[in-house]
Image 1 (tube, helix red, strand yellow):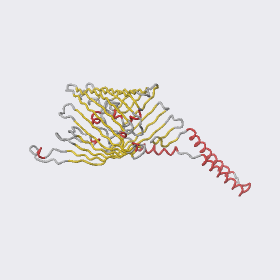
Image 2 (cartoon, one colour):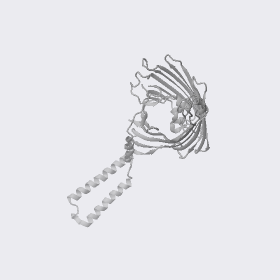
Image 3 (cartoon, helix red, strand yellow):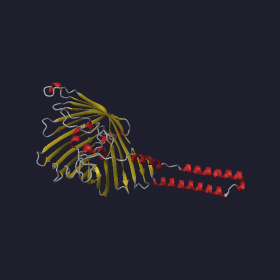
Image 4 (cartoon, one colour):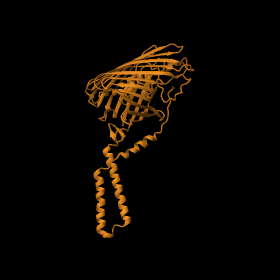
Length: 454
């Protein structure tokens, strides 16, 4: 139960798997018939040219071997066609599958290329000259980055009841391939499932919605400060396939991914961690709320959810034994070309022997299409209250999505502006916000991102 650390994986495994797609190609039956007809024609021609002595022993063996090869090849390909096995492109992803459907490997990828321009006010020379005797220049930061480059492998094994997902991402600042998802789920029947491995703690709905299916260029600053992130553990889930879902996870704690079982011993790790989340579908379908936009649906949908997270630090170690309790409530709505969502989140932190703190925040956002399925405007407002800070934090984001491909998120271009009206006390460079100097406000960030999914 330890702190987060990166691991390297063999990226070449992806190329080996992709290379295997050629095995799924098939030869039409009429092509095999044509090859047999050609052999028959050669037989008749040779027979006419050479008379009764044309077929010696060597030629008999040669023709017999050739016919056996063609028949075996034809039988194999016919079997593939009958059983339905093979490879191809389905529902936006490459796949390999057995004929009976008991084994399936689906290959997916996400590439986000982003340009970010950040402007912050720095402390002026006049403010510091009495103490430091020198000026600090204003600083703007800008540049491109591969914000997300991910590969994912998912599917089922031994039948439809055992599903899995393995996903990793190349680091935006070092290119190191890091494991994100590595889990399996076993369907137990009657809506129940048991799952285990490395996964996202079922806490904030904003975090559970994929980074590829957000409304803005990236998630909110609130999410960056309060998310449970990835963890390792086991859980149970229930889904009645109608209007109710529930998940309960026992894990190594918020943000504890890619760690050995004893990594945190003596270093302020986690003794235990529990996360529970429930969702109720008031109208529409569950699929509508796998993203934050209303692509491809005019049906009204409404969903509410809530979650709690409770964890305690390692007993008796040299670090501070800290107890955390977080809670959240969220709601999402979608209609014909419009969407709205919001949530509130709180976190109580109680260090052993120290003063407890209570932080909380909320996010509201919405969007609407000006051109159906193509051009969408959106806006978001965040408010944070960090215990111990004299001022609250307000952040406003507004921008637009252009959906280039008819499959929506598969190819889209997003541009937005993030305006932090108040002092940003802690970095969230991944979303384009940096720590402000003391007393400084009005940080402004422009982001432009092209996304491709496969």
